[in-house]
Image (tube, rainbow, N blue to C red; front, side):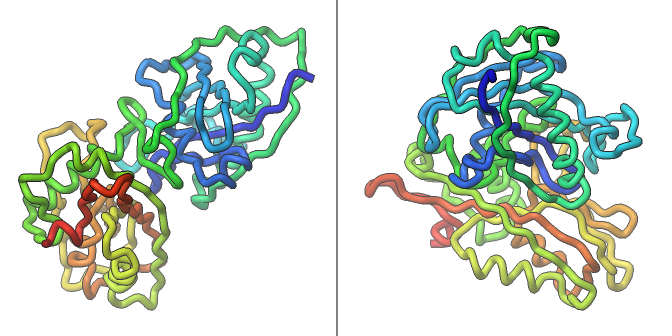
Length: 344
């Protein structure tokens, strides 16, 4: 027996941005699934390469991950699928980042991983990816024994710098955090961009004073969680479930993502919430809301503006993902800016 390993998968589907779709059970129990998103992030990764990285200082001890990046193919989600590349609602190609997690140091793993082990992991992950693609379901993986097989070639691994855990590296839930070709973005720039857009729209609830200092933000810990908002045919005012979520988290930034089947009243047309000179496939993430074929497509859209747009509108059998960002003080001298604080 070589060792024990757990499979993991990071990707997205048509309505939910990049997240840890499959995580080892012990990581899921510790509520640090987002750790695998951040640790598998690498701008230089190319399709076909197999990467290895050690993770040091996590809540569950030191880990090693072995992973690769590939374009998502239709055969990953369908038994009779072909090699057509899956795309998000904006026409951008979707990546899958899949691999193995080891509860030991990288020097114990290096030069032992064979092709058969990665194939075993990808085969195990196919069913979970299909469930996520069709039903938005995330899963846990369990320990499996990787046995040595001399008939399978040893893989040449490219070692990345160790991933060191800091206070803000290990968040409790997901963080939209894919860059470049995978549309990866960091949480802090997303918040800054969202605040800038809201300022232009004139929503006083999100106005931040020009005296806000970067050092104040660095003393804050941003904790992100996700909730899902379900709409049914009986919802005659689609703003009500959104308002209920906002009342539940009055001191948080809340951003919405997904698409809605909307019965528009009086042939109403929703104009895009933002205008930009960026190309449609730009990796820069901005809040948007667009309309196409009776559907509204939201991407990182502030909940306040969505409430105003959906008031008295009927939404049928739809679901939105709400990313809820709250701040926590790390020391007594810090002052964390929240939507409520920004109004004072």
